[in-house]
Image (cartoon, rainbow, N blue to C red; front, side, top):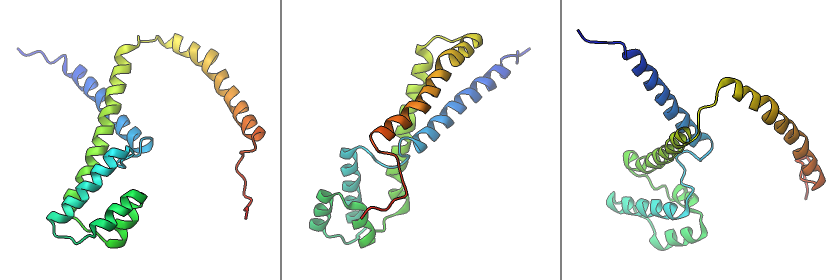
Length: 161
């Protein structure tokens, strides 16, 4: 006879790690820029990839103007203005790799933090929330607007010319 008692645990474990992956992907989309490249050297590598792809697919671009645009950091305007149309599969490859790397980094940090810290009992967690975190949040709700008012940085609807 085959024992099937662990199947419930396997599905629970699988659902738990699937939720970790989902939350990390959403976190990388909402807070880390998603598929956008925010690290500057990788940004230049991406546009070097665009030049090579344009050469491979016989799209005419002016290299000197392109390098000038790189130095002025106005690449999106250059690509939009000159209508560089690449293969959709190749042009979508780099952003998806960037999103995957950001998500993998978040998954690594999530699992690392989960393995590093001890598990807290529910009553200890509730005590921490009521006695430490709630007063801290209320103090931040009061202190941050006071600081902004003091340094006159509150947003307003005034148009200054």
